[in-house]
Image 1 (cartoon, one colour):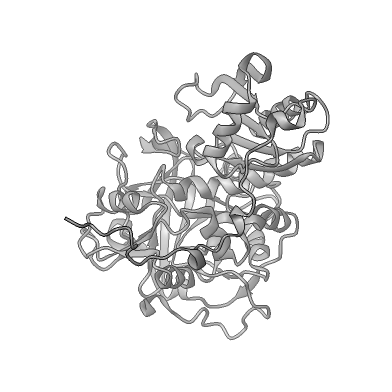
Image 2: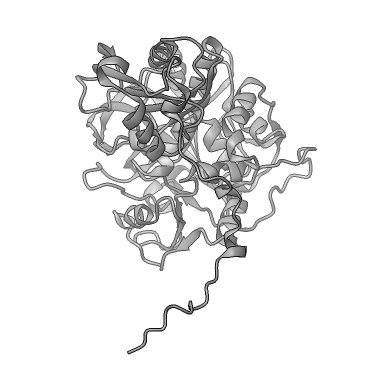
Length: 478
């Protein structure tokens, strides 16, 4: 694993503070040291092979696939952040502080620290040297994907009006040696592009592959349009993030990244993109999408290509945690009784929200349910539980529904609402929402909902009281 270790920066003017989080390569070394990193034999096929193996390991081990079939000089990595506790560990914070630290970073971003040189620019390819399929080991994930996709690329662009950067992740179809098809949803990147297009101009972009866990998570922050997510990444790590200017674009990218693709979103240009396996584990349809023309590619000497398999845990968790932080902020502003929220993996970390609260008034839980629907349109089903229920344990939430919920009394159903267009059960996002109040009624007798418990159970030291040797009673006599 020492092959992953490189000097962090070749710039003498390093940022003065030490970051508490790990960069990508440090995190890989840490995963290896803790037996959470699997290495594939060389020759794993880029078409389905890498994704299939990553899915088999999903949530248990990250994957390194060196010298894959079709690009023997490359290395693919995946599944780096497929558990929320791994994300907290990579950021150097406690798992139960993940949302509060993310909230703090989003509210108090740190300006980035510019360096003049960085390893992500060790190699520079321009003009005829640019051929994405030759330079990079880009996998094809799911059976009916329209081809190879860049799925863990941070797209960075600048607001033409203000110069403020935006960072986000988009699915990027490899449409040719120097062309990417991009799905732009109605968010900040599309807003920036529309401004440029209205002026008859392309929009310069950089696609960063192999960024740190902090940069990946920060890219998904739901913040105002005038916030640079790289500054949130700085705050997540407790010190300004090192950034470097692109070789051909006026865009700053994380200095410790592996690969940077520089290009332009083309004005008044649309071409077919998709289908592609999305987070609900169904395919996003084929349609005319925006187009990026590539001008340059820069990399480390031996870059690592990070891919996020569509619909896998890494895909879900990266999108889920920032949404949880935003939803918690919104709900606690109205209801201080709300203690925590969780977008459950079984609901694709988008559609099922579990809310932990301490009800103070009859009917308050139903109001909380309606506030949850308003907090994010993707939320489809909400379950509200008491503080004694662990919302990160789906079995315990199910127990609360089984023993504290009555459908004719505790269910809220709203028809004709806006939801996710990627939910195939809706009519292009138009559908219904349901909430379940699984809290204990405030007027219930105390003993009626008293949970059973064995005194001292949690304090038993299993290593001290269990004997792993062959027991005397296991004589196995004839």
